[in-house]
Amino acid sequence: MSDISFLYFFLPVFMGIYLITPKVLKRLLVILAGAGVIFWADPVGLIPMGVCILSGYLFGIFIHNFRDKIWGKVFLGLEIAINAAVFLLFHRTAFDGSDLMTLLGQRSLVKSAAAIGASVMPLHSVAYCIDVYKKKYVCEHKFTTVAEYIAFFPTFGAGPILSFDKMKPQFEDPKPGFAKCAVGVRMLMLGLIMKLFISNAMYEMWHDVTDIPLKSMPVPAAWLGALGFAMFFYFEVCAFCCMACGMASLMGLELCYSLPAAIQSKSFRGLCRHANPSLYHWSRKYIYRKIKRDDNGFSEFLAIMFSVMLAVLWYGVSMRSVMFGAALIVVLCFEKILECPLKKLPGFVRYILLLFLTLVIIPFMAFSEPAEALLYISAMFGSGDNTLDTASSYLFGSYSVPMIMALVVSLGAFGYLKRKKVFNNEYLTTIIQPVWVIALLIICTAFLVSGDNCIYMF
Image (cartoon, rainbow, N blue to C red; front, side, top):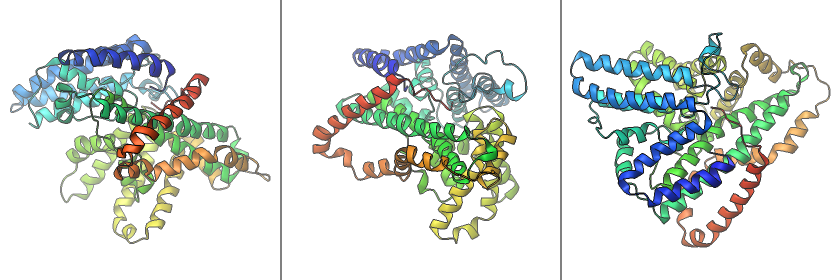
């Protein structure tokens, strides 16, 4: 999605064909486009796409017909097992190439396959069948509607994870127009800006920090590196979600997604909710609430453990995800135990505590080996033997602009402008907006042409 060929070839061609295609054929076109995107990356990726679509469609019908009988549970169990297998076998961490077989110390037969969308399609398929089983809605007999929902290609990058009942009416009656086109272009540009100018820049800062030997790493540089990786981790998701919303809006569809506002959080639970809203709500709806029982403290901690660990594995089935998930579970459990005392603390103290703990545990996600993460954390607290700190001043000077941009966006600047309806101002819409969109498009194109944009977390 942040590739020059996608932006200047695939997207214009697809949108041109999409706008002139009859309404009854638009869903088929979207499915074929998704298959084309996957095939372009690696033909093997069509396997998880086909399995997720077919299992979701067929088991949805079976579950609907037998949901009041034991066979309904059997079919639901098979659906979950099949999609879990697809997720574990085909989803890998593009950041370091890790997958399930690497985690188990084995060589994966599908390790070389770039199965785009393998983190999103299984969740769509399982959510659809669970909701059918719970009688939230009846099963869909139109194959193309289910297939478009499960394999909606704008969400392949990093979501957002969609709800079938909210998307079905839009799939059946998409309403592209000039207003939605303007919103789509704006969201697409915001996503590109976050990807190219914040996420990539923060990753480069992290890369510069890791070039410093841990034994001589200055304390400020270590903390800056942790902050850089945390920002990269956060804005990588935000960027792809914004671009997905932009592409959907161009197609006349509206996706539910909250603009970045992570620093507004005062707790780890709030941070998890703001960091990836759709994943948070999916794991809470289908995992946390299923395990938790009313007035049962043990079941709540059990629900936190399973929902957090399974949600973290969405970012990659690797040892780094397991270690980060374990650290996050510990922090969330202590936060739950100390909930009442923490609420009595002043807001700024809770902000500082949240930032401190986030930066302390983020190295577990940044390093493949737990030992490296522990060494880095010890460097953050002064284990490095250094007498002259020139690295920190270099990092401040080189990355101050993207860090300020990241801070402003994390404070909810985009959401504030949206709430104030700044983008609805007629003068801004008709005169100013086209100018800055074109200017930013030119700048983004220059970055894309340079080839420094291919950094992915997923």
